[in-house]
Image (cartoon, rainbow, N blue to C red; front, side):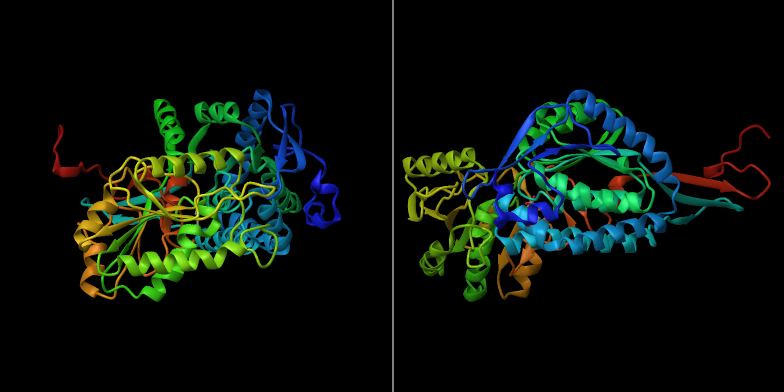
Length: 511
Ligand code: UN1
């Protein structure tokens, strides 16, 4: 086990051991199968986690529901204070937790630390929200009446997260849900169980210090079976799911069958449009991070570059040079000099190989990369492909690897059409200096995505905005802006203080 190696001392700083319990409902107890957590950088086992059995899930859901009664009655600012302390506890563990994410997920350390920072930022946002959660008072048409919108917590919610953001996406949901007065059962990806245990230990320490039941933030490490149990569970008033479009569609249907709520963050197929007037220095620097960063494993990664014909050759040539400059910086994600880490699993390497082979078969040209790197771990070359039609099935599907398709466009309108012609609708960006084009891009005939950027990458969103996308991306919005509404139920309250009954719409009934 890597945990025995003093080089990975940060694991013990986080309270992890060789064998860990992956279920927390106020106490740590698991009866399910043993999961081994691998480091994608070398394929070695970091440590083990015992997952939930179906009855462990049941115990978590029951304990969470019970804990809700205490939590819901606390004033929102008091809940905010708990979330503030969670933010502080995360600040204390910023480095070791970032190192764990890097080791277990495979992203480079600055990005891994960045995603812990993202959770801290959401705690800050949630703290403010805890004192500003609104409730509108509306004018009544009747004298002596008032209309009030009262927002109440939903109760228990389920949070299912993916391997690629094992901290931040939980944080977006948890911090906001907590100030809203919800409790949660978290089912993390079963390939990042150690990160989930470490995060839960940090949250637990704050809850315990404040004498709050631990089941306010329950954890249930498990596979598909536990996920399905959670999705079908009527006690889970909301299921927030991040993952593939195929699985998300099933989750949506299952949750809808029981009239629960769902919040879906599914696949993306994000494009950058390069206008004829784009500042190419900006574009190149953004595209390198957007296409090759995180080894292509963000749902916001740029998969398509739609490049104006006037600058097409120049952009492809310069991008190839930029890629050539980073190949020597592919390696151990924990090392300071590394820019690109491994793919997360051997299956991801297979998917990469299959996609590259299929692209070549269909007449695509590998302009850069295209090969698996011969070394331990799951490393592949960041890859640029040209020559495929904009609407080929390959270009229109998401491969979770660093592959970008370059496509020539005659004008912006065509670029927008291509941007919108895929099933997914998560993120998009336009590089231009033209004010008119910017407003076209963000207008009714512009990008149909949930995230519509100008002169920045498609990835790397801040927490203040609502995060999510349209169409096959699932339609959910998490994190900032008014996303808190997902975690609460609204009652429209009409109060009569006039002393007489008056019906709306001036209806006279009887005398
Ligand atoms: C994801 O890939 O699931 O915008 C989330 C970004 C990050 C979040 C990505 N803030 O790239």
